[in-house]
Amino acid sequence: MANIKQARKRVGTIEKKRAQNAAFKSELRTTVKVFEKKADQNDVAGAKEAFSNAVKKIDKAVNRGIFHKNTAARQKSRMHKRLNELSA
Image (tube, rainbow, N blue to C red; front, top):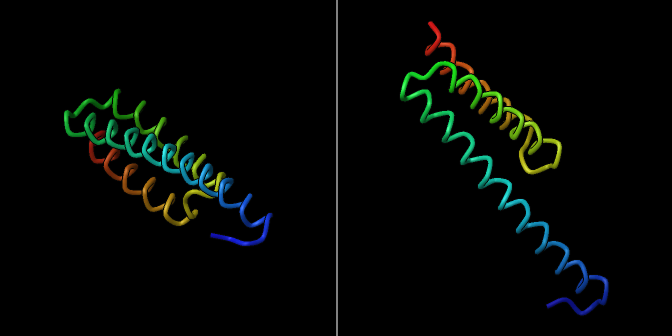
């Protein structure tokens, strides 16, 4: 445990932020899984909508500092590739 007062305060702040980030990551993973499920079912319209939602969440994660921009780019690229294969 930290001895300095401000460091003790930061422990609580960091824990709260960690919980928020974990919840957001979980939500994001669920959104990506919805896209994958639609793609597995060959539902092109549903997959396009799910892709759009997933990309929004991924971009928001980058803006919040939860994901690195390259990680987001890789995930979006893989999903877009899958969507293009589905549409073809």
